[in-house]
Image (cartoon, rainbow, N blue to C red; front, side):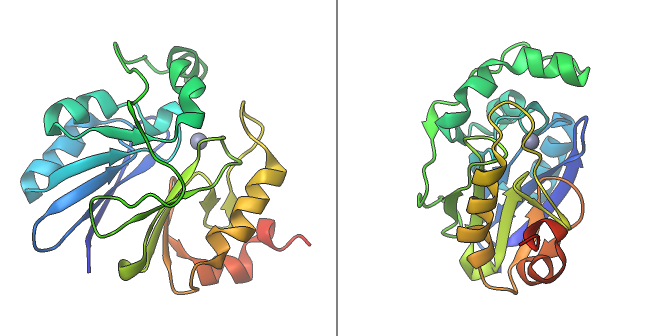
Length: 210
Ligand SMILES: [Zn+2]
């Protein structure tokens, strides 16, 4: 099984996740949303070799520390380019959140599409638009684990009232993609506690409306 480390970081306590191969310690790092020093400390103390920095979506609370983590690890940043405009509006997003904007945080050069395979643990990219147009989930089948960003939470779903949000699309992404994963799949959401697909299937009020 993969080594899985989570750390709530940044202004909205986004769940930063590191998923590492237990033998090689090669790892992907998901959503460096802030607190770069803490993330770097975790990487270095465990000896993780970060191969890819992967972003669930372009909201600032998921990307604030991306430039520093990229610089420290040398790993490239990947995202879905449908969130390019969000990324370009990072200063505005910081203004709304009341946090200081990073000096430099250009959109990543590397695009991830639905079905792409990550460099660690054969993780698979699932494009789940709705919370934002470029929202991604990362599924690690052999490890029975999915990182859902702000698409699915314990007993909740992502908000769709921000620019790029679309409730109908979010529901379609959830019903046709995320909720078709096996019930015993561990879910690490973008914020808050972990859950499983099965638990959300039976008790998430937003998924059981109809
Ligand atoms: Zn978000």
